[in-house]
Amino acid sequence: MDRMRIAGKPQYVARGFFLALTLFASSVLPGSAEADQVIAVVGPITGPQSENGLDYTGGVELAVDDINAKGGLLGQKLTYVTVDDACDPDQAEAAAQQIVSDPPAVVIGHYCSSCSIRAAPLYAKAHILEISPTSTSPTLTEMGISSVFRMLGRDDDQGRTVARRLAAWPDGRVAVLDDGSLYGRELADMVRSELASHGVRPVVDESFSPGAQSYERVIRRLADTKTAAVFIGAYDLDIAVIAREMAAAKLSIAILASDVLIAPSFWEAAGHAGEAAIFTYSPNPLDLPAGKAFVERAHRRGMELGGQSVLSYASVQVWAEAVRQANSFDTAKVAAALHSGEFTTIIGKVRFDAKGDVAGPPSEWLWYRWRAGKIERAPPAH
Image (cartoon, rainbow, N blue to C red; front, side, top):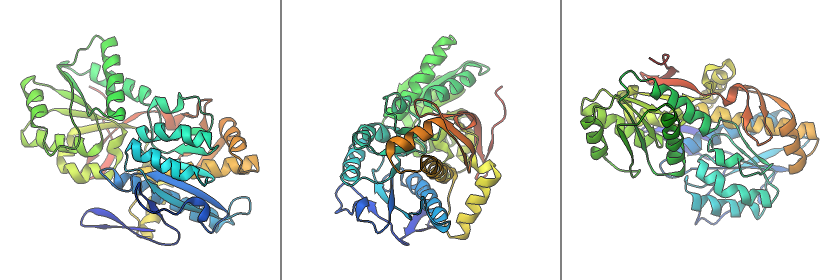
């Protein structure tokens, strides 16, 4: 599956075994694949977040190819199927029901927290291991499911990181917005709670409906209150619209956002207006030599991949190493190995706590920004 950019949009050309299963499509389920072990990759292959879902699908493809090139896993070859949830919880539930009817060896996904949370109990009931490269909601690993893991830090820690920076803003005129989604609202609520503990009351504190062509009312509120900095709990494309409209209105307002801005789609949508934004992310896998080499190797294959593909590649790596340590594909044995072991991956050493949260450096939240189409570390707080 080679990824190419056509008119600024990611397109895929099928290569080998590639499926995109949608809610209404006639589907081929994992067990029908002509391979010994199947990985199900679940994320938004369609919809506003499709570029991000396709990005981490590319990481899984390369991981599968690399494992197969070395003889496979426990003597068996791997393949994968890609299942579309469109970043919609209802479609995620339908996708999970398709998957559990013929279980794969592991699920890599979902991309959106609301989808992971909806699907996780279904996978658990079917004894399927789930590793999400990107879902950050604390709820996912607070459900008490021993076979759920994540490769990125938690939103409660991320919210505290954001709030500390906002609370120290020089003139104190800060705002908090969210898009009403589980992800955006939950993260923004954590920022609000932490700001309150610092004695900071936002000058603007409200929700908006996602997917709009314009956020004129929000922009006007920020201007009227002379807001200096705003945290926006939302997905990347809506933040890009707000950034463009603030630039057009000549407002000098700093945007603080979350890990969603790691996606190249943010810069593509916001352009230079995106330079008003800083965002939190784990130690950027594209800053690591192995991460850079991975993206360059993908580029040589015609695949333009980003940081999320590195996390999905690492997700397959930790699962494969746990399978080797357990000497089994059995979910309970592999989960026990994941909870107890330490794994060498493309993002460095990885381990998990008892809840399935990634521990150590990959769980930390650092500050980044876009500059001239490239991601760099953001300067320290004022």
